[in-house]
Image 1: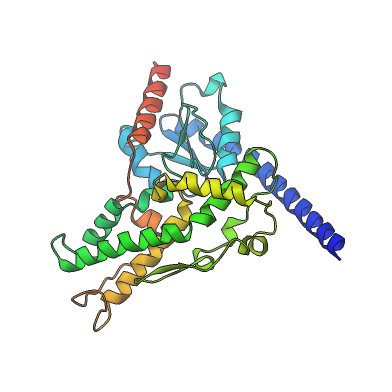
Image 2: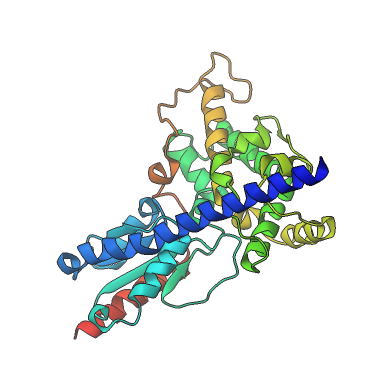
Length: 322
């Protein structure tokens, strides 16, 4: 029975590997083909290669630094798609005078340190939406809370406290995901984790009074059958490594922004009650937190390294054109 189960697992893993390779092959050409269709009529514009829907964050930041020229965004499907597109375009003389920008999330990967490619300062662009400074702006401008209001102080304190608890609750999860990526980068593991299939609520329960983990190390086998085994000592070392860093910046960004969205919904819900539990006065908040990446793009943090990259690439294209 044990041997039969192992065989089933191997078959399932091979199937997943084949699907991963098919998806990778699909994204190898999509960005380049889109580029060939668009670049001739957009020679004077910044052309930006992105993984998915990242233009919601990059649009204004690129436009402001590129003489107000309308950016053209080409979605490459994922990080590998952007890098493959870069490999197909880079070095071809006919594209030298174009303003080409390549944006990828660093994720849990080692940095490439390629000056032609921008890697996010933090795990992903989503992390740029979840700092205390960003949440302060959201409370001021969307919840209409003033800095000197008691409810503003309460809301911000709740966010700081719950975010700390959240990070402790997902510390092992992020460490385990990072260990999986280490194996993948070293060639030991061929399959990508199916993280898109998982919601934050699969791992934690979030309330205004506490955040509690609802998983343990034994949960990973059933939740991620495609995953490789991580030895306990390897996972423990990764946890220690993470604990020395700013967790809001290095943890998986999609989980970070899911936490933010859930927290804001809970604050809105409590403020809307006849008698709020946490806040002094009832307050109607009309905004719906459906697409926070688009809604809060103006509030999100912007690193100097991003503007430096955009400025440098725009100036280089201008010099080539002279």
